[in-house]
Length: 354
Ligand code: SF4
Image (cartoon, rainbow, N blue to C red; front, side, top):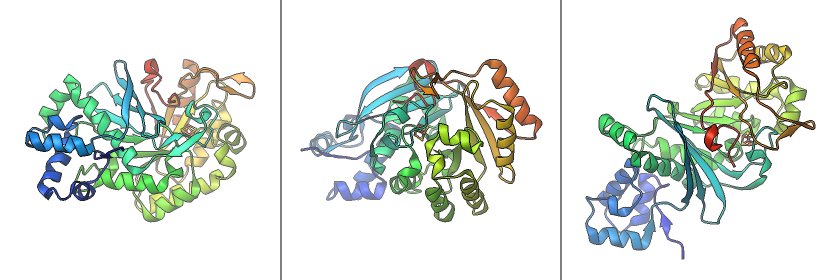
């Protein structure tokens, strides 16, 4: 029989699960999980006999890391869940030793964006909140095992090893809203990890019903919309969810989110060579962004073998295409950032997971 895993639980739930052990034991265990331990044996302020007892009755993680690929700034882990399904989670270093955890919310994805590897896998199932949170602690334990991060941890003392969370791994988070919401409340719990909502970014391809729900009821995390293009016809072809979620409605949801207390929105443009780099794309993006406090994030498309659009193999934008696209957006007064091509060596970059 599988034993209960502890790493994805909030402090109150953890206390209940280990009952009748006293509350202070739950506090100790939780503190070790936050520090990124990967084994009960590392919980040195818990007596040996109790550590053995805990090992007999519980596991730290329900999933297990089956592979881990690393390049200079990215660590991609494949995690096998209890039912054998596989997901991926990625740890990114921005070069200044600031770490970002990229978490998945579904096994596979039903959205089927044509430029995304995950979209080709089909949909297997939603992750539950524990499985989402657990990825954060698995990545924390990997970061803690990394020498540089350990030094950083000593330096920062009480702060988290990981600085930011982006929920833009495998899956469409807003098609799994209930579990996403629960996961964020565990990560954000002031009596536990207390990870600031402002350092959590949820990326969506634009699921209106959930966006309106978040705009009305929170959580007011940072929101990123994978816009890709504001040409409705082209977007329907690239991102089939557009048919049921027209851009006008998506924009209304973003405006309401901002009006009700949400911060600046990131509009992500995965730039596909020769497809969404036209002048009309620039103009339509600018029109879409009107009235929204936003920043445009250009993500030059990361190559994935075998992906096609209208019978042609997708390819990366040229340097000239990228530079000119950015210049044209800036000339229209938009704020533009470019996401560095991180993680490509390990196929851990945006759109490559799976
Ligand atoms: S881009 Fe996101 S929403 Fe679209 S298929 Fe990939 S994982 Fe799903």
